[in-house]
Length: 107
Image (cartoon, rainbow, N blue to C red; front, side, top):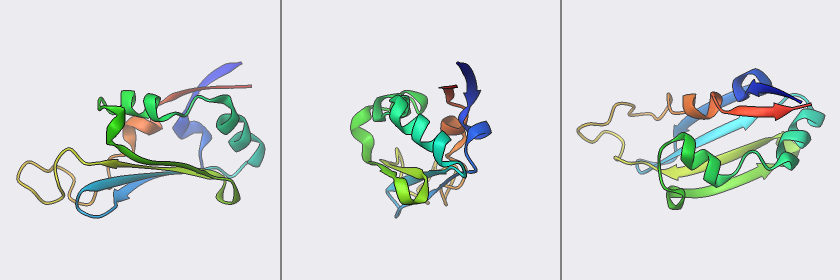
């Protein structure tokens, strides 16, 4: 097995607002075998995502694998609502970096 960053394995990793109070992360692969390997490995979990974002796992509202899209989606509650004083990413478009940097073991 070798270790790789998720950004080296996925075709698309993006984030966006899911309304003013939540952020959604999308990860899409272009290789079905790789997607299935990662999905079935148990390396992508709500607990591990929460750890990457330094938040409690109860902030994760949705964690879903979509086989037909070869990807997964994670939605979590924002610490501060979009556009509120102190918000540094109004559109939630730069929130995918911690997930992209996640180390994944692949064959």
